[in-house]
Image (tube, rainbow, N blue to C red; front, side, top):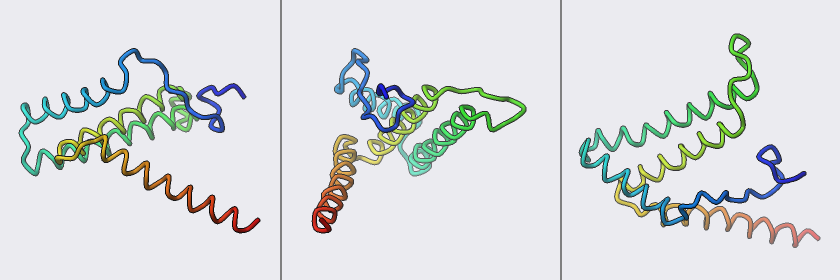
Length: 131
């Protein structure tokens, strides 16, 4: 397999978007600021930002159904690239929501990565003990 988006067994390699990682975090902060300035930051607004994640998840589900042609009336309507883009929307929206709650999205994501990584460490230890 060649590492294409259709090969889930190959590691994902980031495409060079030309912006770099700093642009991602800056854009998340700009989106949060724009929402704060436009809509305010009361509890109802923060709730809407969190619910927006569910909306984006629904778009992932719709795109995935479109890849497989699950709706016989519509047929195949999406590509795996569409699904990946929608997954990116979910991740971005979640990071904006975290920032809206007053958290640094880099710290939030790093904590999740550390938690998941610790599971690998435990799994690696269990595997080596069985040998």
